[in-house]
Structure formats: structure tokens, C-alpha cells
Image (cartoon, rainbow over all chains, first blue to last red):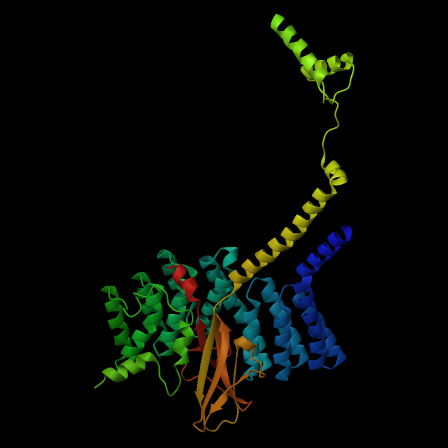
Length: 297
Length: 185
């Protein structure tokens, strides 16, 4: 009986720890140390990089992210001093509570596009300022600890908007309007993306902000906001002046006209975003232009 | 009082006649008195868990087994629930790019840490059309097409183009979790 009990307990403990044991064995197979030694064979270079990488991991940055960062940097012939400097910066950003993955990707994007290291270094100061601003706004919309993912996503979206030329004042204006309308962080996220989509059509920043502001203040839902860039695209294709289009749209919004195409939808299939993209290619233009083609004489 | 004494006599007689008790009258009287005064059992050793463990091995083993089974099961179930909560919708995104001169086209971006060991697009026939498919979790991703390992281009069919920190353009894809979206409506 005793033997049976002991065997049973041992089996249960093994069962509980199996996942941990398996994970550990996989992780041990390719460690960051091994990878860095492989990418940077010079012992001095690799030892300093390993030290920095391990401190990043110790501070809570996932091992895989560190590994991928070093890998991409090494594949683009980035000198080890630069990689170490960037990793230090990433560590500092992470300590300040900013999304480290976003910083890593920003640096890697520069490296891959062949931007000079000096320029990347110089841009990091403004990146820090922008990220801090975005993180603060995002935190005001998603203050709860469990909303971290939402917060990071919103911060990334705001960061992209700032990089695209929108001013901090623009984002603050929209943020305060979203809060006045008592809308959640996801609503703000969708609004920012709609704004960037409209801007990508060639509209001026101030016009785009004005339009999105009007949408928020006139109680557009998330579905309305998602479909709105397509409506703007339809008008955009009529070759009117963009300022006139914006004025016309704002008048429509203020008169209570809302997009109707998806208003009645209660629940969309989970892959709606991908579906809309899946049909898009140079040979298969977006829905908006298709409609326009059909309507034009 | 009189009634009580008659009752006592009857009780004593009954106790005396019980087949299993073989004891003198004095002992039975004493036992009766103790029972009546509630003295019996006062000095009895108190029951404790250790006695259960010591003397009732089967109960003890059952308790241990129950704990051993229930604790891992609870932990396992909790981890499953947590994993399910964390699970996000996976999107299958198809990218298309037209370039008849390219020999190799890759998609690189935030989703693969801009690694050149990225996702190679395959050529569709001789049309010069390249196609690639990715499985992505909800989020926003910047990406570009890398042509022949050297030049890079933004996606002409992308609805959002953003400028990076260094003044260059990138395409942006936004995959938002609809369940989340509609929950808040």
C-alpha cells in the first residue's frame, strides 16, 4: 500500500512538472549565449553582448525577443558595440515601463533599411520622448493592470501616428474627446487607425484630425469608425478637392448621417480584417475603388 | 421522589439482568451513578487528528490520495483556463505583390523581428505576381517587401502607410480582435 501511494505521488508530481521540464529542455537546446557566440565569434565581443543580453532577460524581457534582436542585427552586419548600445537602451526603456518590443522593432527596422547607426542613435532620444507620451496617453485609457495588452497596442498605434506626422496636440485632442464620450481604449485604437488610413489617402493631417474628431463627437460606433475610411475613399476617388471632401463629410456627420453598411452587424466573423486584406492585391483593388468604378459613368 | 426510587430499582434490575454485563451489584450501582452525574467520559482522552493518522491508516491514505489528485488537477485546470483566456484570434493574412523582374521576394516586419530569414513569397506562374501567407495574432504590424535580399518596397495595396523614425515608409497592417471590439459596444 505504501509503495503504491509513493508511486502515485511521484507520478502526480512528474505529471505536474512535465511541461516545465519539457520547456526547460527546449530552451536549453539553443540559449542566447550560444546564439551570440555563433553570431559574434570574437570572444571579447560575445562576452560583453552575453552579459548585456542576460541582464535584459533577468529584467523580464523574453529570451526569444533578445535572441531575435541579436540575430537580425548580426545578419545585417551591425557591429557588436552598436548592438550592445541598443540593448542597453532597450533595457532602459523596459525599466521605464515602455513596451520594449516596440523599441526593438524600431531599431531593427532602421538597421534592415540600411539607416546609418549614428542616425539610429540620434533618433532614439526622440523615440523615448514620443514613447513616453504615447504610453502615458494609453495608460489614461487603459489604467487597469489587466489591460496591459490593450495599453501596449494603443501605445504602438499612437506611436505610429506620431511618426506619421501627427502632432502630440492632435492626439491629445482626440484622446480627450474619446474620454468625454466615455469610450474605451479599443475605440480610441480603432479611431487612430482610421485616422492613419485616411491620411494615407493623401489628406492633410489637420483635415484628418478634424474629421475623426467629428466622428467621435457624433457618437460613431466602433463598426462605423472601421468602415469610415472606405466611405472617405469612395469620395476621394471622385477627384474633388480634398478640403472640400472633408467639409462635405463633416457636414454629413453633423447632420447625423452615419455609415450604414455595417451598422446592423452584431458580430462579425473573427477573421474579418484578414478577409478584407486577403482580397486586396494590385490586381484586386479595395472595395471602395470597386464601387466607384461601378458608379462612374 | 418516590417515583424516582422505583424507577432506579427497575433500572438497576434491568442492568443486572443484561446478559453481557457480568459485574457485581456495587459496580453496576457505581456505573449508574456516574452515568447519572455525567461523570463518565470526562477523563477520556480527547480525539485528535494524529490518532486518526496513527490508528486509521486507510483514512489517512484516502486523505493523501484525494489531496494528491485534486491539487494537480486544480492547477492543471487553472492553467488551461488561463491559457484559453490568453489565446487570441489567429488571422491568416495573404500578401500579394507584383514585380516581374524580382527573383526573390520576402516579407519582413514586426512579426518576425525584421529577420531576413523571413517569409518567402512564391511566384504565381509567370505573371510576375508574388504571394505569401502569414498566420498572425491580433495587433499592429509594420512590414515591407524585401526584393532580392537588397531593395525594399512598401506594399502598394496596403491601406495604411506610415513613416518610420528615420523618415522611410513602411506598410502597416492592423488586425484587431473583433470579440473584444463587440464586447465593448
